[in-house]
Image 1 (cartoon, rainbow, N blue to C red):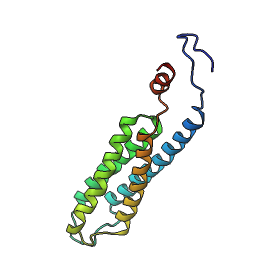
Image 2 (image 1 turned 60 degrees about the horizontal axis):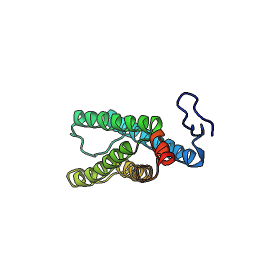
Image 3 (image 1 turned 90 degrees about the vertical axis):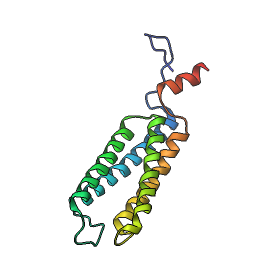
Image 4 (image 1 turned 90 degrees about the horizontal axis):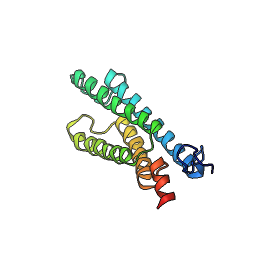
Length: 152
């Protein structure tokens, strides 16, 4: 490692080592899953992907729901690609649990209770939940974490 001439602390390798590369791959894959979820929620909001067979369904509710959920997943994808912060991954994991539990909780009130789009989203969200838990529970590649390991 070379020393940072400004502060005198060693700099971590630019690639973050093997662990950093593996974390980056998990973050990139999770970001793609979040982006895919955002796209499907956008399709649901636009009425292109039908999630109910009720012809009298409230399309304004689906539009707001799709826009809100799609925006949340788009923001999640951006955060996954831009940052490696444990708190963000815990919050993202909590959001996934909420989304999955809410879907199962609302299902009995819908016709049909479960449909292909919703089940596909929940599978993708389950995989995303596992990736977020992995990121949250393993050592991050942040500067402070690497500095603490060197100093302490």
